[in-house]
Length: 118
Picture 1: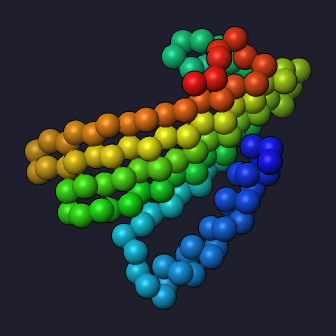
Picture 2: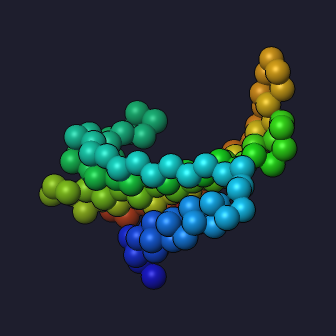
């Protein structure tokens, strides 16, 4: 299944998640954001011009101190570039009263970029 189709499937499932949360409240938050970037850069490297993107992120409270964040990002160039990017991440975070600490794992998949997947 192509990345865009997977993303659209995930977005289509969001209303069913919100209906389930109304019946049995969950400590869950979901956010979906779309945007346009005239110049897409990652860590100082120009990836593409004229990029449309969609991001989805969820935060799950495991306890009063532990939080799990899950998210994904899809971007595609709209101009002359054939660039596209699909990435995801998972973060486990411990939040104390005066400090917080966590660990994050990310995966990036690029098409038509000098970056390699990984």
